[in-house]
Image 1 (cartoon, rainbow, N blue to C red):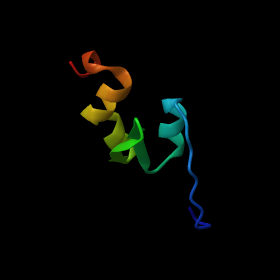
Image 2: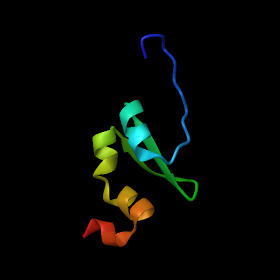
Image 3: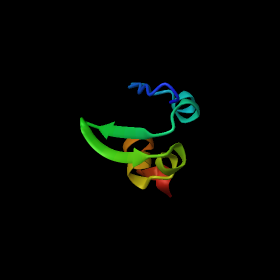
Length: 58
C-alpha cells in the first residue's frame, strides 16, 4: 500500500484472503456480488449463500 501497488488475487482459500486483503471483491458466475472489508464480506448473506449454501445462513 505504501508503494501505491494494487494486487489482484484470485483465491479460494478464504483464511489467506481475509488475512492478506484490506478490500475484497467477490464474484459469482462472473457477476460482482459484494465488495468490502474482510469483516463485511464474511458477514455478507449473498456471499455466504453463493459460497457456503443457503443452510449456512440459518
